[in-house]
Length: 494
Image 1 (cartoon, rainbow, N blue to C red):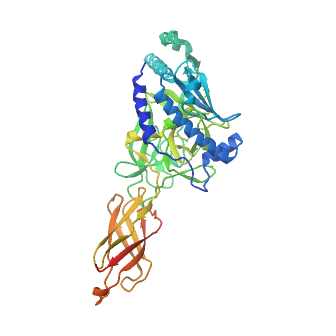
Image 2 (image 1 turned 180 degrees about the vertical axis):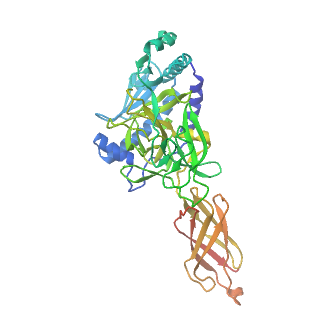
Image 3 (image 1 turned 180 degrees about the horizontal axis):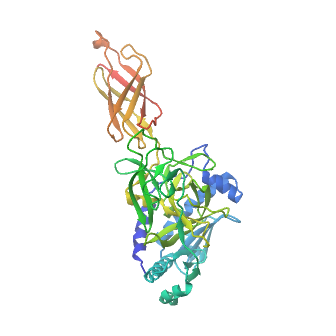
């Protein structure tokens, strides 16, 4: 029953366990929106909320390990927040013994389960295929708490006939009536972009293999759109808008002034006006019950918890798997206008808003989002570093010669770059002053410029060694400027 997908996934999980490093914490002194909202939703201190967020990340790591090492018995993992925080781990055999081999943390509870996640995934895939073959609309998911595979359909009797072989073979499939499925939320968004007739959300700043910067939104949004505040339309680049994928990206207009693009998102009515994005967090790192937040122009800032990581539905004539989350307040977590908006945990990008449940469905107030790792299908990477100088090493050389000075910078600046150099200490052979140099072409970090110490005329043979103290900064074409970095150049006759 479609087990090849899981063999591939186990290999991928093993790779992630050894190679991925991430950060979800805000900078010291900053407000972490996820922690801020969690503490108020569950009535705990921000310190306790931060500890629970760390525990959630560790639970995600355990989930990946169990799936990779015990796929035949692992039946899922989820987090409960009330009355107390705990992580429930489900296995089909020896649950207590297996869990103890990984952790003795008292917040973890092991329980027996009737079937494994691998089996439930296979049954879900089989049911999806049978309903699709019968020409039926549906939405399927996995209820980890009940170890059930659920299918929401408009006609339960017809679905029963289409799936009769599967229903006779297993007893953990549930058919539920619904009047609709998933609707995409396209009116306006995080920072509003206007299309015709749609208006959508901007998501994250990204860059491609050529280090060109751009902005994402949902693939189902209009390809021709104007970023509010810019007179010219954005320049559409590419999209992936079917099945598992709902993403497109744009560059800024090619004419007119350059506009700054930072590793930052806007929080509409959030605890802070903006949030720096410093990492990405793939879906395999967030278990069911993990807290996530989103921002949308229409639906504003809101946080909730992941309910289902295996929500299957039709998107442009192909079955897509999206993550479903519900708000902690019971209010609508996604509304018309939020499509394409950012979904995040702390300072980490986790996804792009896809939609919400249709009217009359039990998931009307739920948020559906595409995991952030899928933007790689367009060759994109989320911008997670601000433009700044990383380091300039102290260098030495001879008088009246070109001494190479190497500058390491981070981030993705817009070229041309302007380098400004100021001499801090005034010397007879090296007067104080400020000099500027332009670098018109894209330059990979590090790049090099040459500095020369002039000899004092007539005294070159006994000129003493000197140390020139410089301050260097960079400014890109959009006006983003780095902090000035102080560094030294040592000059001597020999």
